[in-house]
Image (cartoon, rainbow, N blue to C red; front, side, top):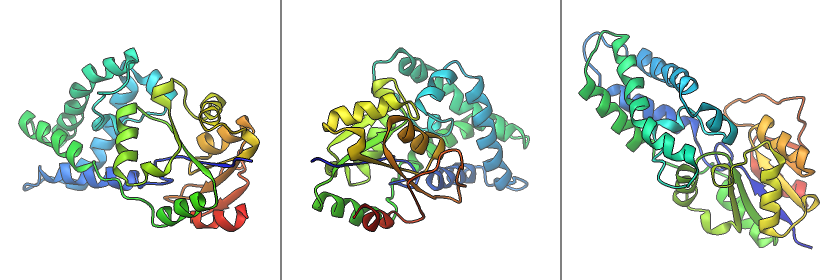
Length: 258
């Protein structure tokens, strides 16, 4: 009988939030001059990004597929044929510039060239995809035990594919489901049905691994799939969506699966 282990990508396999924070700091540092509060600039840029994103024309679509404001600061939108992807490609450059322009203006800096340099710096600096320490050995052991491996990730096609291809483990996976490619995102059980179909397994023969109770665990429960929740970045458990295994290091999966 085939068995499958399904993995979320961001903050399950690869660090995500910490790398975004590094990119904010690097971009803010371009404005390092007398009287500038860089910590405030970082905070303001993140807050403004979320507000402008929520006010933007594609928010409902992005919320549905799980694509965030901070991801909008560095996605290229050069993959996928959904009309909203094309719309994001047109809208995002102005959004990015507006974020840094407004953050600078809050400290009485009015310099569009600097704001554009910060846009470019964020996009370049954000492109780092380190794995969590236990991931390489874990995936290799699961393959050794005969598990099929799948990715179930929310986001736009270009970013999620870039992350997976650049982090060094793409070749270990037998199937990938990206919400922006199939127009269905976690926690909708449809994305789990899709990956099961791609792998040729039933829900009872799968386990879903992720860090987000509301998306990964709730979606797995709705699809009839066992779940593993890994705590990353101090995220709290959610009693509404109890996982079959809670852990802080995914190496704990191996004895549990045995």
